[in-house]
Image 1 (cartoon, rainbow, N blue to C red):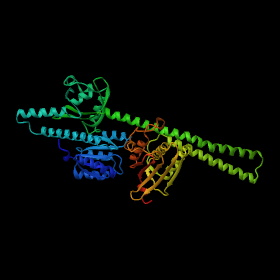
Image 2 (cartoon, helix red, strand yellow; image 1 turned 45 degrees about the vertical axis):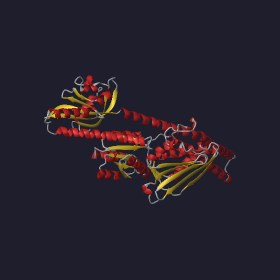
Image 3 (cartoon, rainbow, N blue to C red; image 1 turned 90 degrees about the vertical axis):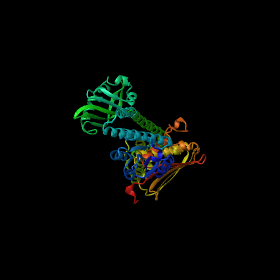
Image 4 (tube, rainbow, N blue to C red; image 1 turned 180 degrees about the vertical axis):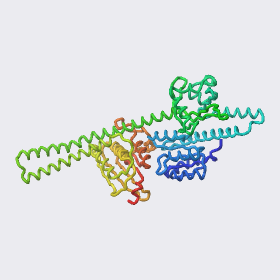
Length: 521
């Protein structure tokens, strides 16, 4: 195996800080690193420098990480690609693995996870190179001596036996003649039970074999008589079905079918990740519902005030009508009461509409989000909760801010979480400041939430974005608030920065790129 100094890596990430930190870690480990700030530049670097490994962020403007992965695998199939994802993006990580990424790592990226992913990528490259060397060896003339022939056979067996994928081969009668160690571990059948005793069809549950054969004979998954990354199910020793991904090819001798070779990849871990994605969505919604409950408890009081006003005005209007025909003076008074009833009813409607919008389960929908509208909605929803908590709200919203490209509901949840974190940090009341502005140099919209609360101890700061990490009581959630904010910002190509000192309050800034369509604004 070559030393780290012989390994070249192309690192693609639109965040300059992440590129710098990861480059230092990789170069300290002996790797040669070239970096790119976007997918197009990264693909050009792949063509110019021919790295063995590519590390790419999934969420990037322009060509995203999945497009980079697909392009690299199509143009340079021997390069290994490691993708970086945010918490809550397991569905994208699963899609990357299905596209033959060697591994994925989640942000914030630890050195341990990075080096483990690189180790796996290098093992795949080395295994593939060994296989290539062996295939080249088979294409040469027959070994001139029996000793050379025995060596090549031993190498073949060793290569097949130690492959990271399960390898199964059968002859023209469909009897299994090749069955490596990985297949033993995957299915639980020993070599003694399988080799020359079992047939290919015995490994498939009902209906799957016919679908496999149809796909093999079609052109859909890699061409006629070939399959690439086809998903099916196999039967393990206990009779349970397991999901697998298979690449297969029919073998021919003088135009006569002589056998079949299959390379299987166990998908149970990927299916486990898919279940975790579902669980994450459920828990995130649970956290959102807890926030909704806290909002609703305070909003009930806020709605009660305009309802009481509406009732009083209606009683006054009823009294005016009972006094007979309306004089000009009473008509003006009646109209004024009607206007007040309409105003108070609209106020109730806006509050209820905001709560319904916040609670709605919806698929992410990216579009132009106006920051002033977003912050006003968040202040409307949390205003009474702040008043009940004896917290003074000050805000400074810059006029004519350009919109950002994002999902309104997710960004609203993001700001509401920050406001609730601030409320929890000031149990005796205090000051909350909400600021929005545009940084002209970076063209980023910055939202700042500052509280005068108890602050965060320095030893806790490195952990605040970790899922389920919390120092609060159970009544204040499951510790997903800042983790949710971090994940939402990752999906919006944004970032989160926290400054805090115990006893001096906390300042949290979220930054997002202004919409390109409004660059001149």
